[in-house]
Length: 375
Ligand code: G6P
Image (cartoon, rainbow, N blue to C red; front, side, top):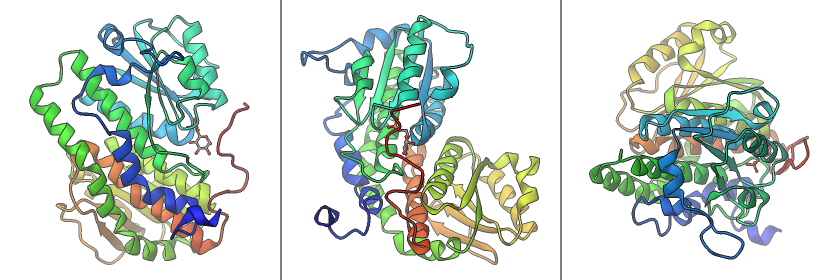
């Protein structure tokens, strides 16, 4: 009811603003990177299984999920391969469960689910098990869910109850859990130096404060939302670790505003979507200051040269400036490996405020359900 909403107009807005707390809670008590964090708890309250033993034995990861949870898996692939050096595949659960695949018993099967009850994800998990893959782990927001019961190992995110159909705080807490999983796997395989462990832990502890300053960008996002409210199409671009963030940004916009939005890996622009670019096509670009920034800047020029209007989320230390046809919101910092957790927040706010401007039912978009427990 209205009382629980406090100063917020909708649950989606409230949940976006809860993210510093949700991440803080999810990472609470994490003093060092130990595989035991993933042991999970059996029905008797005792440790369910030894993650350390499992982590040492696996040589690849298979992530299975749907919707927003699938996009957090897509981002995690970059961490798992880049930091832990573990080959990683990410699949949409409803695809995986029905296709012929080549199982490797030394796979860690990771399901990601806010509810822990999504029918396709549960079925994909069972399918993987039927193919002989016994090492299963879930990143899940509901400790008592079927998913947690079905998996050997678990990390419970502490986003708290999420009411808005469009997932926000569950997504960022999943990313936090997946980053921790990356570090724990790296640790088990002897690929995490004490120095980088300390460095990553420091960055993780800084997240609540960093999120707070990103949330303070809301007024600037509201002015973008006024432009977006009048559009019927939008393109989202990202590269590398932030390509999944562009995908999640496009999904948020679709879900709550009904504007057709599509995400592209920026390097693919010239292979098709550039044909769509006109002054009526806003192009949102996630531009962290990483190794791909110079490449991304030339992608921006490709859009500008066709009269496309850019909306760029740039890190503090990039030299991308507001100019004709180019709107820039500067992120307060440059966040390194954890950057996706920060860059997604303005995209959530953009979808939210555009929806408010269009007067859609933000918390209950047409045709969608919070938890899809039937196929
Ligand atoms: C539904 C919800 C999405 C969610 C997806 C997967 O489509 O509307 O917000 O991302 O299901 O749900 P799960 O609970 O498995 O994360």
